[in-house]
Each structure stands twice: as C-alpha cells, then as structure tokens.
Amino acid sequence: MPSTDDIPARRPAVPAAPRRTARPRRFLMCPPQHFDVRYSINPWMDPAKPVDTRLAEAQWSGLKRLYEELGHTVEVIAPVPGLPDMVFAANGATVVDGRVLGARFRHVERTAEGPAYLSWFTGHGYTDVHRPEHINEGEGDYLLAGRTLLAGTGFRTDPRSHAEAQEFFGLPVVGLTLVDPEFYHLDTALAVLSDDEVMYYPEAFSPGSRAVLRELYPDAILATAEDAAVFGLNALSDGRHVLLPDAAVHLGKRLRERGFEPIGVDLTELLKAGGSVKCCTLELRPR
Ligand code: ARG
Image 1 (cartoon, rainbow, N blue to C red):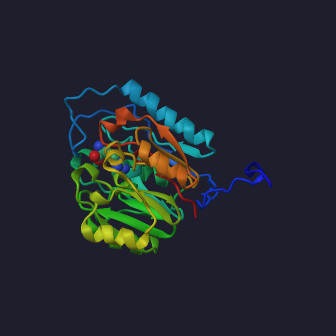
Image 2 (cartoon, rainbow, N blue to C red; image 1 turned 60 degrees about the horizontal axis):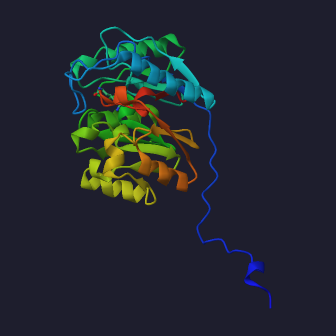
Image 3 (cartoon, helix red, strand yellow; image 1 turned 135 degrees about the vertical axis):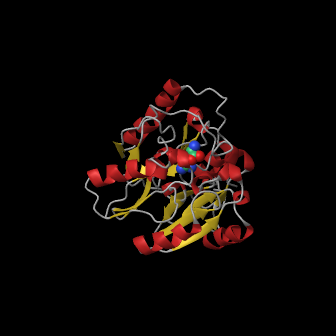
C-alpha cells in the first residue's frame, strides 16, 4: 500500500493570478515648493492645520524617485508662487495620443493653474492643444481606461466638458456622477489598473453611475470605506505596480490577489489638501 506521503499534494482550485507587465510611462509632476493649505475648496482642507512644506517636499521626492526606479520618466513643471495646489499636476490637463485638453478650474483660487500648465505644453513641443470652453479639472476627472475616457462630474468638471472632450479626442466618454463631497474628483473614487480593470468606491457614485460601473467592470475591485477614507483609490498603476497610499491595506491585499504589485507610498502632508499619489501625477501619453 503506498503511503499517503507519496501522493503529490493537490493544489487548491484557485485560478492563478495573471502575469502582469509594466509599460514605461512619462509623467509630469510639480514640486510642492509653494504647497500650503490656505483656503478650503474640499472637505479635507483645513487652513487652521499647519502644513510641513519640507516634509511635503520629501514625500513628493520619494514618489518621483520611485517612479524613476520603476523605469518611468518624470518631467517637472516649475511651481508658481501663490498657487499652493499646483503640486496636483493631475489637474493640469488631460493628454491622450499626444493631444492636450487644457484644464479650466472651478475655483478662482486655482484659475491661474490652467494657463500655467498650458504654457508648459506649448513650450514643450505639443502642437495639438485645446483651450477648454467648459470647466474641467484634467485627469482629476478624466481617466483613460483602454480607449475609453471615464469622466467624472458632480463637484468640479462641468458635464458639458464631457462632450467637448469626446469631440476633441475622438474617443468615447463615459460620464460618471460623484455624490460624496469627500470624493470630489473621479481620481479620488476610482483608479484604472489596466486597459479593462478598475477599482472604485461604489458609495461615491450616484445609483445610475454605480450601475454603469457594474455593467462595464463586473469584476472590479471594490474599495471599503476605510480604503477610500485614506485616499486608497488615488492610485497609479503602470500595469503591474500600483502605487497607492500605504494606509490602504485592504486594497493592497486585493491587488496582490489579482497579480498586481502594490507599493505603499506616504504622502500624508499632501492629503491635508485632499490629494495623494494620482493627484500629483499627470500622464503624458504619446501619439
Ligand atoms: N486641494 C486640491 C483641490 O481641491 C486638491 C486636488 C487634488 N487633485 C486630484 N487630482 N484629485 O482642488
């Protein structure tokens, strides 16, 4: 009789996580030299709470270094004094196929950032640049998933901008309505992980938009309230590595199960203004 020791152990019937490959990216970032919380345009911002600009600079530099170590290219735009939120480069534009849709901010405190970012693009060889008619806060509310633009509205970006973006890029735009002021930009409530995978916090969306997300992404990773509250969805995926706030532990686990490599990042000073990894990063997608 063969002993049971001879029987090879059966592997549990769990499907293997897919192999993930990173694609090198080009990013635009803005150093937080003038970062501060001097006004409040979202519920995270409390001007009474002191900000440690040196610590913000160290945390931001850590993120930039991490991108470079992962093989990505980071371009830097000069920060403008008097624009404390300019560090949130994601809001500066939306760039797809080398075409640039400029940003137009909702709040007067950030208005001057629109032209500042636009002039960076015109000064760096971008010729297909669209000056926006309607309010849109760049990649804060526009996230490219495959060849579809997911587009947020509800707090910042005007829904009329969605049609403007669709016409300019010639890509389908799917509008999604945000309903919780804590998650005022799409990139605070949803992150694109690959061409056809996302993670999001359902409670941040209107019932109709939740249904749309279920329809498009039935297998999406759903964030818990705890993940969302530490800005875990303000993440950046290169197809393999997912950089996200280190406090988002539940999301980290879910990502690992799917074959991604989560990398926790500490950007707590920037969170005082309601921003983290993705907010600090604008992707420059070439033609
Ligand atoms: N204080 C900034 C604002 O409220 C934070 C922007 C965060 N950026 C983002 N992409 N979500 O406008």
